[in-house]
Each structure stands twice: as structure tokens, then as C-alpha cells.
Image 1 (cartoon, rainbow over the protein chains, first blue to last red):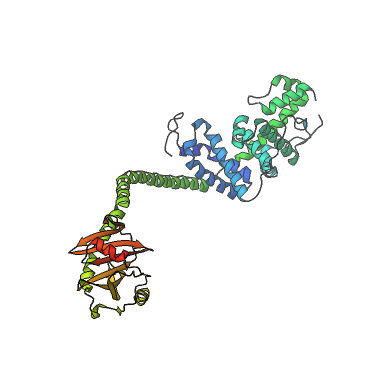
Image 2: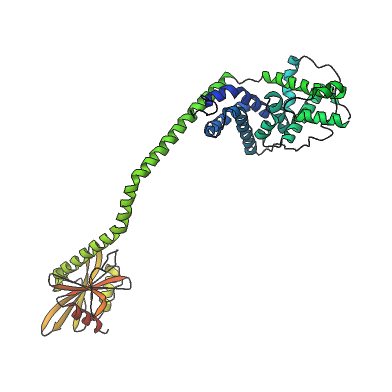
Length: 179
Length: 259
């Protein structure tokens, strides 16, 4: 596990975890919606990362690699719990998806909304909020998020935007208008 | 929705390098669409700032990495030892194969030699078959066979021997196993010649190294201390006929006994 990656000399598992542990935890938190479950998910993911360390091709892709391990670990846990992750394929050309977004009121200060956003995220289907999170918070490219989620890029983009739309409704930030 | 708006919003959602500002600035509805998207992103990012791993989790992660590293070391050492062991085991395995292939033959021959020596010893020990040597005194083969069935636990068949009289039998011990020993006396030319017939279960002995009797190859023969023994197998038992005769004569006694 001490083996350095050729593309980034000196890169070790500790360094990768040091750089991306917060990312992994935040994503785990969004996936599980609960702090203790998120910590367990992180720990389980770290175990798998240790064992799969030799499979990391490049330190530059370490973040997506770690998130993919977290995603798959989460799916495994869900499967073990006999619960299904709702997977819905969406079409990026769906008219409803591209419909106008018209804020009806001025949003409150960001700080005041943070907790409400966290709660609202928990109400989104897990596949949607994960796509949203990877794109908008962890700032993965769509291609990277697609790799993490094992989904086509268009599906990732449409899920993320569905999540945004739903989130705005839940936060009463605005309602969609007609096209 | 116009095609330009649709194309703009589609590229906005799929773009990895940012939307085209020209259309967004010129179209209020698309501008609002983009602003809404950016606002939501900001809100979610702000919420994310509150989600930080605790110190306890960081410690757990460090411990997990150390534990996994330790296990990996153990696995690596085990594999290394296994490789060394496999290399070292090569000659041992070769030796084991040689032993497994050759040992049975060697032991089989070795035990056959011991049996043969025991046959001759017992022939001398029990012949001539005085009354004190007999456990069952009978000229009736069926009675002696019944004795063997009860006391030796084998179904030995006693063949009639030409010019020889059955006098009885006893249980003896051949190389640690029970054997049936029947006593005959051949009266020819006015001289009583003791003949012993042994029957026992084989235990992997290899009698094939003994020379076959030329006139009757199914019988194997050996001569030891002036005693001739012929051996053959029949119905799962080894029979041995021992006496101070030569092998063809012993075979003749058997073949012409005609029960």
C-alpha cells in the first residue's frame, strides 16, 4: 500500500485519504442521510480502498476512484439490506426537464437555508441526489460522475437537474413555469 | 420554447466548460434558467460545508488503514512463506512420490519374505504334529474347516492330498496375523512325511518374486532350510503347502488329491 503512483510521485493512500476524506464523508452523508451510517460507509469504503489500492491508475483520478468505491459500497450495503435504490432513466431532452425555472420569491440568506437544504436533499431519490452532489458539490465532470455511477452521461445530467428542480420545490424557492 | 433556448439549456446541463453567455444574456427566460441552476448549486455547496468528518472518524480511518496494512503484511508474508515452502517442498514431494511408488513394492516383498520364513519356522515348530501340537484332532476336513472358521475366522478349504492323511489343525500366527495350519502325514515308502498346509488372508504381500513351479505356474515355490513351500491364491486366501518334498511333488499331491 506504500507504493507510489508513477504519475504523482510520493502519492500514498494516506495522502489520497487526507485530500479526499471530506469528499467521501460528505457524499456518504448525502447517500445515507445519517451521520453514523455515513461514518460506517466511509470506514467500509476505506477498507475496500486499502485492498484495491493497487488498482488506482493515477493519483489524478483518486477522487473519482474513491467516490466510486464509496458508491459501490453503498449499493452493496443497500442490497444487503434488501432495499433497492430507485433507478430511473431520464431523457436529457425531456421537455419538462428543460422547462423554465422562474423564482417566485427572493431566496433567504444561504446560511439560513443550509439545514433546510440538507433536509430537502434527504427527500430526493438517492440516485438523483447522488448525481446532484457529485456534479454540483464535488464538482466532478459529467464524464467522471458517469464513471462513478456507472451511468450514461446524459442520465447523470438529467438526474442532477431533476434533483435541482425538486430541491427548489421543496425549499419553496420557485416553481417551474410552462415552456 | 424556441429551439435556441432548448439547445442552450441542454448544453448548459451537459456542459463541462460553462454555458454560452451570449444567448443567456439575450434571453431572459434562459438567463433565469441558468440563474436558478447556479443558485441551487450554491445552496447545496453551502449546505455541504456543514458536513465535515469528525475527528473520531478521522481516527477510525487511520486505524483502519493501519489494520489493513498489517493484514496485508501478514498476507504478503504468508504468500512469501508459501512460495518458499513450495520451493522447499519440491524435493520432499519428489522423495514422497518415490517412496509412495516404491515403498509398497518394497514392503510387499519384505513382508512376503517374512511370511515365507514364518511358514518354514512354523513347519519345523509344529511338525511332526504330535497330539500336543493339535488344537483340533480330526481326519475330517469339514471338522477342521469348522475349527478354522470359528477360531481363525477364515473360510479355509482343505484340499485332499494324495497319499496323505489329515490329522488335525490349529491356529498359528504369521507375521502378526492369525493363520490356519492343517497337519497332514504322507505315508509313502514306509516313511511318514509331515506336510503342513497354511491358509491366511493376504495383506499386500508380493509373492510374485517367488519362482513359479514350471509344471504348474499358478503355484509359486521357495526352498528354505531343506523345506519346500508352494504358494497359491484361491478365493481371497493365500494357501501354502510346506514339506520335505520338492515342488513338483507337492503340486502332484494337490492336483491328484481329488476330493
